[in-house]
Structures are given as structure tokens and as C-alpha cells.
Amino acid sequence: MGAQSLAVAYGALALCLALAKAANPGFVVRITQAGLDYAHQQGIAILEKELARLKLPDISGDSRLRHVGKVRYEISSLELQSFNLPYSRISLSPNVGLHISISNAFAEVDGDWRVKLLFIRDHGSFNLNVENVYIKIDLKLGSDTSGKPTVDTSSCSTRISKVRVHFLGKFGWLYNLFYNAVESRFRNILERKVCETVASSVHNDLQPYLRSLPVTARIDAMAGIDYSLVAPPTATAQSLDVELKGEFFSMVHRSAVPFTPLPLALPSDHDHMVYFGASSFFFNTASFAYHAAGALVFEITDSMIPEAVDFHLNTATFSAFVPQLEKMYPDMLMKIRLSTPSAPSLNIRPGGLSLQPVVDVQAYAILPNSSLAPLFLLSLTGNVSAFIDVRSGHIVGNLSVGRLRLFLKHSDVGTFQVRQLQSIMNIFASTILLPHLNGRLEQGFPLPLPDRIQLSNILVRFHQNFLLLGADVHYQPKERT
Ligand SMILES: *[C@@H]1O[C@H](CO)[C@@H](O)[C@H](O)[C@H]1NC(C)=O
Ligand SMILES: *[C@@H]1O[C@H](CO)[C@@H](O)[C@H](O)[C@H]1NC(C)=O
Ligand SMILES: *[C@@H]1O[C@H](CO)[C@@H](O)[C@H](O)[C@H]1NC(C)=O
Image (cartoon, rainbow, N blue to C red; front, side, top):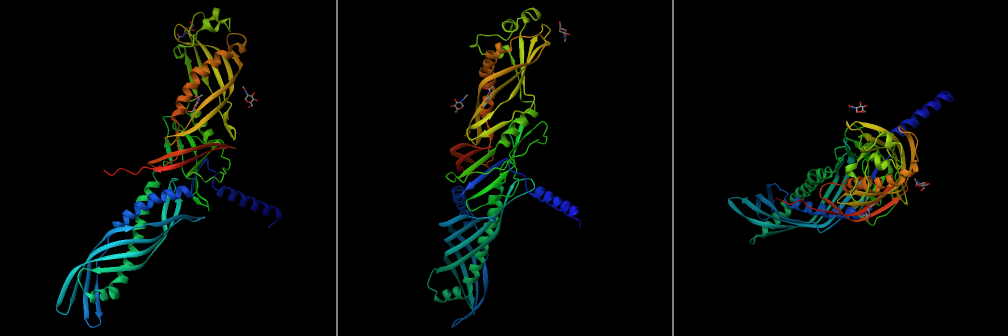
């Protein structure tokens, strides 16, 4: 191979590797050890209930006992009275998943016995204490093709080191029978059943719960958020990180976003149970989606002007700034149409979240036959800063705007002093446009949370290119009906 073709081959290889690497997430969810500990408490309570419901099969066989002879036995109606998991912990296995170890668990089992030797038959009931049960479970986390999280038991082992049996009545030889013939079979069965119950609880309780994570959340008629996983969750020594697409899309017409997220490196904070990192990509796709859906257009008419503002949106008022209106369009109402020629892009820095939108302001006179006569087109910019908070599992916010700057793009009514319109535009912005936008932002946008999770103890912090939210979690169990 010549040097050139070698270079081509390397180039192709580098390209393949670059493509194989998953895209950067627009949104990251980090669950810290504190969060895992909380989830684990909830999970163990569920597992305890599931284990107490575990069904055990009958055990029967023949055994030859010294001084007694051949005995046919049958153990039936085995029923767990309780299964207690007092000591357990969850830990992160870096690059593998989660590890749960349960120690000194104990259970109580009732059952019936029946024996036959020669021509004697007898039966009765008994009670078992299963003690020093050790259970080790590995959970493997993944993602499916729809970007939903998956969880599976990748390994489970149970070891029971002590079984104490009490027969009601005095049957010394029954104890011998039990420890010679039954105990180890019983232990093996219970050890296997515990792991089967763990696997089915993970499959039937935990997996569906994780799948309640809304990977595409509809926000309103115009937009939704794509929270699908871009990679399987990754366990590090400190946290479980879930990388999500974090992309808004237009419900009307979803189109490819013309920019990509920057890498998102969360700080190593661990005081809260969960952290959310929302990159500037996340917010910029919101702007892109609402713009694409035609939502960033706003019309102002006279009826929308608050009464407290002593001012009318008509040519009589405006002729103070644009004198020629008085002659050209005497005594007519006006309409102002605000729109953004391109989706506003926003910046996140340690100082906060800000944007400098460019807004087209088209003024019209409303003619007596209701058709619109274009008057002039202004371009308006201003520094907008955002306040961000979290309420009811939603990112909420409000905007405030600094001084506006105007310039004339086009006039159908000749020249005029644009600067004179500055104060009117400020009034429109502060009394009409911002209250409208803030009304929408107050409803907020949903965070990626599975069902029945409430957040508290909220932290909001801005970093370069991303917003960091921290929270503690409270799980509200489903009410049994
Ligand atoms: C409305 O009136 C204007 C001027 O009087 C005229 O140019 C326009 O064609 C009219 N539009 C309609 C829809 O009648
Ligand atoms: C917006 O802020 C930047 C720097 O923060 C400043 O240079 C610019 O003049 C401001 N624009 C307006 C319209 O106030
Ligand atoms: C934004 O919300 C915060 C907290 O809810 C409030 O203190 C602030 O006054 C609001 N700002 C605007 C411009 O509405």
C-alpha cells in the first residue's frame, strides 16, 4: 500500500470512529450515591413484599434413617410468612451498572409434613426460620432502540447459611429426617426462588417504572421535547449518568436541527440526589422549534394595550413621531406584527442565561375595509436575560429586557426619526410582549422524570454553556385501590 492510500485508509478509519461515537447529549441526568440510596430504599421495600409472596413447591422423597428404616416424606403447603431485608446497600460498579448486596436477611416459612414408614402414617405442621440470607444482585442498565432506558438482572446469587425448623410436637427423628434429607433441598429451592423473584421484580416492577420516563414529552400544540437516551446509562465511581438527546422539536414539522451540542461536563457536586445538566443546545432547540412552528410571531392591536397605559395604537398617536401618517392614513387604527427572521440563539455563561434576539417590527394602518397598509418595518434588538427556576418538575423562567435598540429597515411612508419610537417600543415590550412570553414561560417545560417523582431542595446554577439544576427526590407511591 502506498503512503497515500494508507493515509486514505487511516482517514476513513478515523471517520468511522468519529461516527461510531455517540453524539453529545443535549441533556444529562446524573444520579448521585444519595439518589441511589433513596431509590434503593424504595426498591428494597418493594422487593421485600415480592419475596414474601414467593411460592415454594412441595418437596417429597424417600430417606433411610438409622434405627427407623425407610421413610417416605412429603413437605407441602410451604408458605412464607415474611421476608425481611434489614441490611442492604447499593453501589456503583464503574462501567458495569449497579450492585446490590443484601446481608443477614431472614424469613419465616410455615408448612405441613406427612410421613409414611412401614405401616405407620403421620402428619403435622412445622415452622421454619431461614436466617443469614445473603443476596447479591447485579443490575445492567441499557437503552433500547426507542431510546428508553432498560434494566436487567445480569447476575444474582443467594446463599442461605442457616435453617432452623420447629415441628409442633415431639418427634426427634423428624429433625434427623429434616436435616438429613430435606434441608439442603429446601435451601436450594429457596435460593433459586429468591433470585427468580428478584429477576421478575426487576422485569415487572423496575423496568416498566423506568420506561415511564417520557422520552418524547409533548409540551403544547407546537412543540415537544425528545428526551431519548443517546447511550446506555454509565456508572462511574461517583454517579450514574444518563445522557439524553435533550432536543425540542416542532409538532407541526420536525426538521433537523442545524447545530450540535457541545460536550457537557457536569461538576462533581454530589450534595443533591439528582442533577440535571441542560446545555445551551437544549434551549436553542426550543427557540428553533418554536420558530419553526411559527410561534415566534406576535401581533399587537389597540385592544391589547392595557388601560393604565394612556395611549392608543392608531395613526393619530403615531403621527407625533411619523408626521406624514396624519395625511396619508388619517384616523386609522394600527397593528404591529413582531416576528423573528431567524430563531434567536441564547448563551449560557456563569453569569446567567441571555439572548440578543433580532425582532422585525412591521407596522400597518388598518384601512376602513379592514385590509392592512404597510407603514414601516423596524428591526429591534435588546439584551434579554432570563431568570430560571424549577417548579412541579418543570423548568420555569421569566425574561427581563434591557434597553431596546431600533433601526429602520424599510419605510412605505418616507423617512422619520426612528429614535422617537424607542419609548413606545419599550412600553410595548414591558406591558404586552414580556407579560405574554412570561405567562408561557411560567408554565415551563417538563424535566425528564419517571412517574410520581417530586423534586425539592432545588439548586440552579449557570456554567459555561449549560444550566445545572440540582434536586432531591421524593417518590410518591401509587395508591392501592
Ligand atoms: C381596501 O381599500 C384600499 C384603498 O381604499 C384598496 O386599495 C384595496 O384594494 C381594498 N381592499 C379590499 C380587499 O377591498
Ligand atoms: C447588550 O450587551 C452587550 C454586552 O453585554 C453590549 O455590548 C450591548 O451594547 C448591549 N446591547 C443593548 C442593545 O443594550
Ligand atoms: C421572575 O420570577 C422571580 C421569581 O418567581 C421574581 O422574583 C421576579 O420578579 C420575576 N421577574 C419578572 C421580570 O417577572
